[in-house]
Length: 509
Ligand SMILES: [Fe+2]
Image (tube, rainbow, N blue to C red; front, side, top):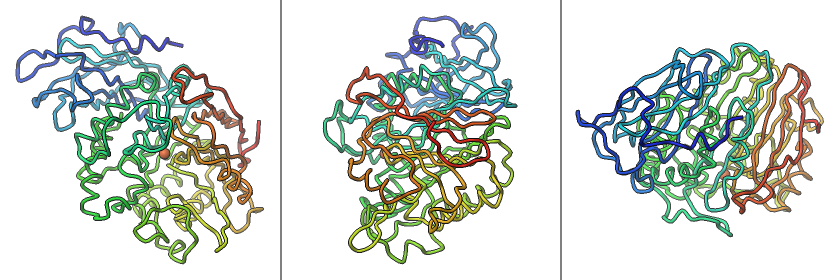
């Protein structure tokens, strides 16, 4: 294991690159301070390529502190930490229009290999990141972590420090990477400003979150796959609808700024770059014949919330509109894309990576059943179509992972929700939150009591989940912080589940 400190040590004085590569309109680049304040990251691993990310931001919390002119940033990928065997290199021209962020695609790499990477702008050298390409085969177990929901004020990112020290092939982030608003009590640190609505304000919010060294360490240690949920834009929004900003045209302006800032701060491929308020971030990743990951975007294309009018999609009693067949969670295009990908996936394990709990979480009220309209329960026919796809294409070992709920869940997904004793067709795991406040004890107890397919629920602990896949088992660990308010908190495993090859359903290990 490589000590974390080494990833974080950049140096303005290092002369390890052959020659300075950065220029501003022909003049040498001179920074007022270290421009690599937000660390480095990699993502979207393929067998022969990977995306490398950084952003030049000498004054990260105040717009970045860069000038308007483009700056060339040189990058290197090496087979060794000393950069003596360079495997890939290039130069990216960063611009103010992209907040001087870098999204470099390093190609010509070999499968299932560790690589080290770094950037240089003028005299400034970035910290070193480590990454790993996707395997071509499946000779060894594949390990990844998944995480979500990191409200900065409510706790420290100690979970990421623990994650960074593990031996992982990948991290999957399922949304709420930033929060637009302050909520909850017992804050340990402050946003310091209000709700962002402009591009500059969203950039500053990402910079604040990314200034956290534990988060930087987890980015520098592994490649990530990331999708957004709602708080990257606005609480519980659906497509162009928000209960906070009710004019869709006005809301889409905010969404455009928010998507742009998300792209600028994540190791996403250039294909994910927003065009106005639209950006394609759903994607299919293959990891040898062990694993297919289908990364879904269930925010951007979904139908407006059911049964709540223009109000907040929370726990409300059922209504006829909820079961309208035309309601969609993924949008027609993504739904068709997913069906085609499920048809052609060949991996032993299929991970459907999406934002929230897919299993039904029905709560009985005096006036009949209540549902959380912001989740899949608000889109039951879209969920049924997704499960139909899994069954129709006989996907081997489908595992759904999610976030959003700020609680750990394990569930057996049934094809027919009306028959809770019917066959289980997929297994679901929801990681808790990295730091965001969880649900009340009574809410979690109700969920377990009223939904027999939920095998486990626990809302009082923050953390993340780990997954290890081999030819016979998928082993899921729920990793929990002792105290999210303690920056040095340790992490301990709460419980372990196993899914056996060919036998869907969460079993306690
Ligand atoms: Fe969240």
